[in-house]
Length: 102
Image (tube, rainbow, N blue to C red; front, side):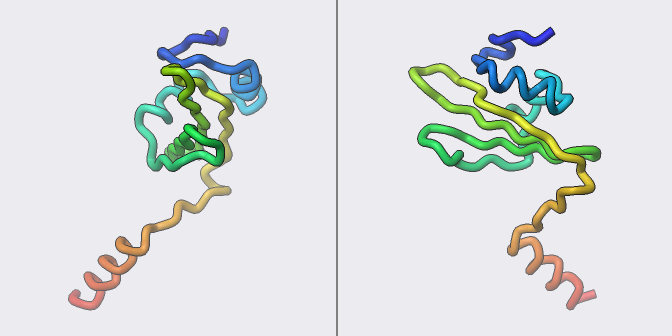
C-alpha cells in the first residue's frame, strides 16, 4: 500500500499512480532521492530531477520544493539495458591519459 506522506515527502496522486504503472516502490523512489547517481535542476522552477542507475534499471524522480514542503511530482524507470550512462568528458580524458602511459 502506498503512503502519501512517505519519507517526509508529499506524494502527488500522479506520482502514486506512476508507482503502480511503472512497478516501482516508494522505497526505490526514496532511495533515488537520498542516493542519486546524478541530480539536476528540473524543467520547472524550484524542481530537482534525481536519477539513480543500478544494476537493473534507471529510476528518475522529479521533486518540487514549495512552501517548505518537498513534493514528489512524478517518477519513472526504464530497464538498464535501454540506458547507457554517459561518461563525463573529464573521466574520458583521464582514462585516455592512463592508456597513453601504460
